[in-house]
Image (tube, rainbow, N blue to C red; front, side):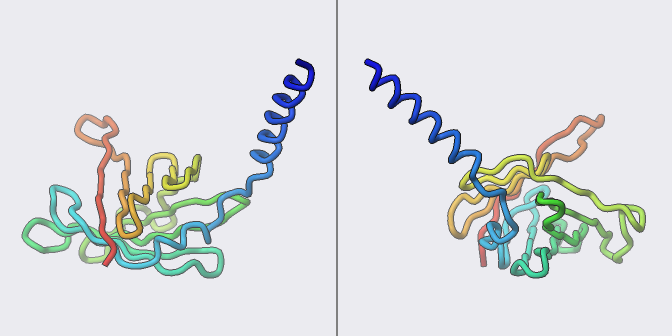
Length: 158
């Protein structure tokens, strides 16, 4: 009985030790995002995201949302960055004429709060790897009346 109790105790202690030794998520862990992703966006109109390879502590990208008639609705400049041992997903929005939505020095920032093997939660923006060539991106935006609503983009790699 003592041997069984000792074995159970050692099992839980070894699990706790390995969990605490797990490395913090790194930008290189998101290298799978590199490339061009397309799918239905707002209102079912085409949306495209493109990510570069991680370099210099950042992974840059851009987003383009079209209207149903094929004209540009808006753009985003994206940067996934490592800062102070944490990952952040940073976004700056632009009108079709490249006029900024945010103030000049303002950037929307989503800090990484949890990770699984296929899901990266940046507190309000979630990247989910559905398959090697499939990405689901969910972002919470203010809807009518100010209530937060998820926008879901189901992308395929091209």
